[in-house]
Image (cartoon, rainbow, N blue to C red):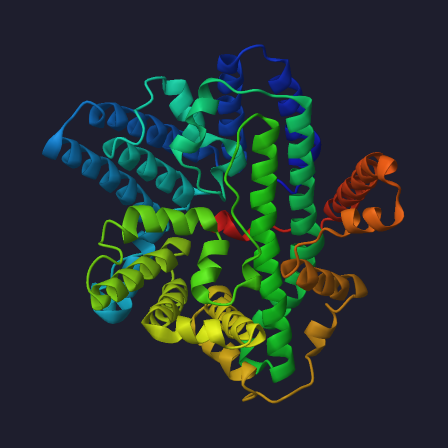
Length: 475
């Protein structure tokens, strides 16, 4: 079950919200949210509900063990909890990757190890990272272990952020697990954010995905013009796909009385890769900073040690995104540019014209997306060959031409504008043309009309069967 589907929008969500707002107490709301979250998770993978419950209550128990301990015992208990989460993540997500790597590099066919073929539970990376941050924050005495198993279970299983984030720290929401206000104002604001996220996913990401899918499906013959068109399409697709999900999760949670952190701040306006990672997937970069980079020593040691820490963090960041060497190279790609910026390039970027530094950042980010999107290493290298004209300058292939509908091209143009613009056009035009006493009601009516239009158009697109699963579901 995905947010941009008929079953969720027109069946699951209305029933859930109706029952949720009818329940009288926070306890009953929590209980219902837990049951709804398990149903949401079980809809596509019923066999993994038991695994989800095992992760929830094992982390609940470990947290209670850590809380009263002191010294090395506290550290040891925390390490055990973290290792157990990493082992679970490793078995489900990385076991086959390590076996394949071992078979291809060390073992000959007679001695090769068989692939396990274990299905990957949706969102296991997010569940594991939530659990690890919870245990470490208890160990650091930033929070106290929650003794209510229901509240702990709701924190680790809330369906809005269960599958693709954002990564929500326990200290951000623990008060709202116990007591929260659900008002019409918050519900209205939440639904507005939710619908904006839905439109970003369905009307922009899914449309631009047509071009990206066509181009990346035949990278061995992609021409210069087609390669850059496909890469531009994927650059927009992954941004609006992931930001769309994050906005839907943030909006839905706000409507329920829970505040999730913002996950994006116009990352494609960045003038360096350092700035990009302050704006892109903010909750993940903050997680790696607080739980990996700083414990490794951060920038407190020598310059070489700092560079090594950055490379380690982004190696792990790439591996977190997927069990493939493509993702590892993507992480190393970003780590390399962070290192050279810290070594002196950042000073140069501050003095060159803004357009130059922006083009540098976009070129680095977009070339990184090649590793992220390509099916394998050879596909990525083929794509790079096309991007520098080794497969010819043009024309665009027949299959890609078939994807260039006016609606799709319009989504590309609108997406590109929205990706680099903080839009506030409605208020600006109201101040110019509408009397002051009428501005508020006209703004409210205009906003409602726009949101309603977004929802209707998204509904039509979903009903036509043109939506696709969120990209980050596989992580």
